[in-house]
Length: 251
Length: 173
Picture 1 (cartoon, rainbow over the protein chains, first blue to last red):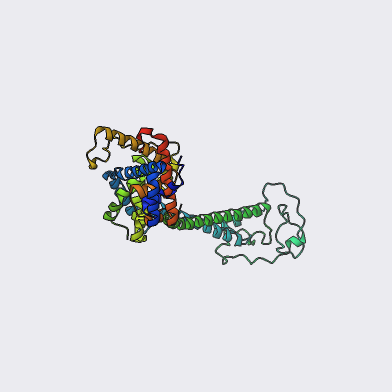
Picture 2: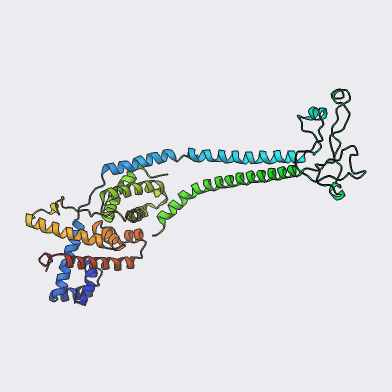
């Protein structure tokens, strides 16, 4: 399109970047070269047309729109987090609380001796001692070896752990007994609490395991939510930092 | 402390004009301008005042190119200035010369819209906005020598485009 190699100097000539000697040489050449003359004329017209392009001013409503956004943002950017974010930590805290309560409650249940009656049931249990096992099919129990705990306990067919090894365990503390006279009348026989050396049933073990599993699940969930809450707060701060960085980094 | 309204107002026309040239659409230019002014309000105080124009132009360019990328499905329509008198301030133009000038500028707008980046931004900022080389180099994150090489290349591409689209009689001889 441009057969003359001197057109490479054309823009430098227009910008005044050529040395004086180069400028004189280019002008001398362009005066005699039709291609450079035409190219120079087109370049000058192009430059003039570009500089004459009318600059369209920014409409005021556009500027006003930006000011409105700024006004909204300045109202929404106090030091405190936004209401939506401020509510989240409370839910996470509730989750943590529920998990902890569940864990403590489970620990209390597990720590209670098996022969200790439930707090609300001692009178009823003494009034109607019911050694009847649950209505489940369990293997027949062997007799309890002599000296292996409470000799008054009736061998129960509901006890699956019948080997001496299984029964070899530390004696449980004696159950609380009320002073004579308080409960004596209500108690037909001064029988101790039922089966102080009894082993937990499979149902109790399964229930305890389920409780532990549930407690750990709740605790893990609460921990996850708390971690997410911390991350979200950090992320909120990072949004502003990354925004600022993105604006300054080259594309 | 965020910039005040006067500081934002000082940049709005340049931002809008650059965005309009890049997007070719007044609606897009308005969106870009508002976004840039909000960012300028947020972060402008962290930028040295002498470099604030270059920073603002860089943000404008990034926002405009992001917008164009996100709207590729929409055909960009080129802004035409046929309703504006061409170089009316010069005076002394006959209707024929006005028509010829408008025709030349229509081809020029088209050629400019066809330029790739960063050539188009360079031409806009240097030839239309008449910004100093250093500000353009800062805005586009280019070394000064590279910027000049790109500018020469952009001008040549514009001339080549005009030579192929303009009728022979419209070309200066």
